[in-house]
Image (cartoon, one colour):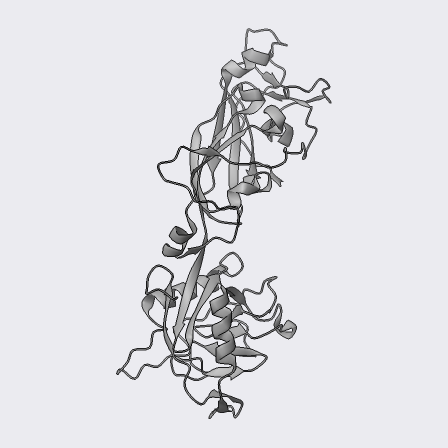
Length: 378
């Protein structure tokens, strides 16, 4: 994906030389490279695995003459783009094999370390590495296709002018979807130019652990799909909202179990009416209600009434798709075994709704914590 950005061009008199100079003077080849500066900048240096890695590429002409640039190795040029503000893909990836990015893996966390930090890594390409190990080049996969404009076109940047573009780097280098720390450098035009070096941290997704009297379940929180709901859930978890406190009268449970449908919990008064102080607006998304998916419970007639209560699906529930906010999913075999155990408890009629969904023996939520911040859930 190419996202042009507006650059402020100073003195962009394309094809015109400085006052008193030759009217058709244009720098090209090695002369052009001497006066150009390549820079890269990140929108943010911390991103979630699987999310966009937005990188800004910028070329600055520091001379009082226009410069003309061509893609190395392209014998046929398809015309010249004058007064350029946005760089094409061909010029961005104008290195050997259509590559001009140097990406080094500085530290790929071990899976155990990810778990200890409350993160998950679903990508099977994650490999153990040492912090002391030398950076290893990232496997970039197939060559970058020259798309998004005529790759062979020459471009003209005016005197003291700028040209640039923003790209989602992960579209071209999928390896940066793997949690880890990466070093980035841009070397376009066959390495004739070299940018500043940047580092980016790719984070795994947060994992919450529900510890109950019937076992523990792990939830991967999908904040890209429902950022406000995940933020609210994490805030409640960290405040101890979901923790049962023995002897205090505070009992948190899965108060509703409907076989073949869902289990529901997170109410401070142990009923379907209980809630925390804050309501979270709906964040309907493209996730589907499948076994193990976690959603935000709300009142039927108010989409923006989600609060502390949540549910976990016991099967496919297409009737809820796009109408209730999903924000997580169970991970790990043990989680599904515990879910099945809860779904089989003996039930009685709920004292408020009359629905036969109340566990005869309370399914107690002893605590919920972010992985790495509590006891082992083995």
